[in-house]
Length: 349
Ligand code: ADP
Ligand code: MN
Ligand code: MN
Ligand code: MN
Image 1 (cartoon, rainbow, N blue to C red):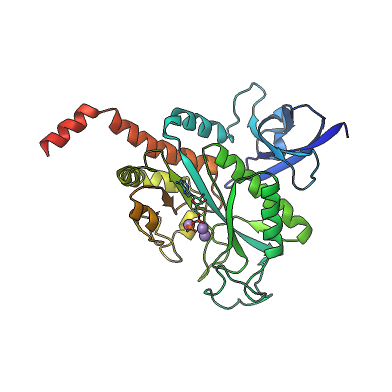
Image 2 (image 1 turned 120 degrees about the vertical axis):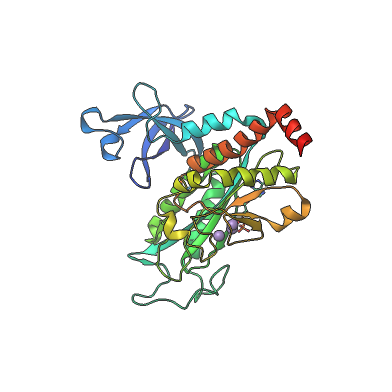
């Protein structure tokens, strides 16, 4: 064929949680996917009288659904004057990442999600509830595992798209699963996570199964869905004190982070079901009931990375990785920038 199909994917303006949208452009073979436009009045991104919004391609990969030369094209949403749209969170993430490029920030995100068939989570009976949680996490067998065909098809699609998926597992609640992306720098981690989410929804279509990132899909004694965000700076990867300093920095900005870690976070971060209460910051080695966990291997090696367990499954990775970068690298540069005061403080101790 002398053309290829480019699936343009973008993030809309739906409140309180943005949705993915996509449409197809036929592009001449050998040409890069160009700038394109869409009707922003249908995506909560514009009014009908000035409806045009612009799609600026930022991340292109093979389309594993269509195959061949076809492509997936993730875009930033821009105004016609070239400024980033108010709903475009990637731009600020990319700017922050650039400012702190010396830190070589890595992120690995654990995306949890829940399959639904109609109005019920996959694996839930038509009425009542399945057996209580306990056997489902990393389970095997038709009585414990629901939706593996879709999960495998999604993993395959992500790998064929060239995404840096690092693993998958069945989660604690039936019908709940996780995939991990990374480690990658921002904003690439956000790009790949958004494309992996799009593939999850898309792969579910022929199975008649939908996936939701809602943080607490079933009330009561059922785990919520999070997006644990593992991160490290170059310094943290070689020095434990840098890990502890990062924890201190996060502690000082707890409320700001909680407010930006996804809608409905109070429902999920109750202090039960492997979460810490959203009301206060905590941390601990191997502690899955803490806001931030220091993996045991990291405490042992005295270097490595941290797991911020607070983000919801429905968080925006551009927002979360921008905030963590800003908080952690900002605090580290502030201390570095004041060597005399630090030395003076240390001398007077
Ligand atoms: P958990 O034990 O919490 O379930 P997972 O194995 O699901 O952990 O996810 C761990 C994540 O941490 C992976 O996405 C991995 O890529 C990421 N990771 C590992 N090392 C680092 C590092 N040094 N910096 C940032 N992320 C890392
Ligand atoms: Mn995990
Ligand atoms: Mn998990
Ligand atoms: Mn985790």
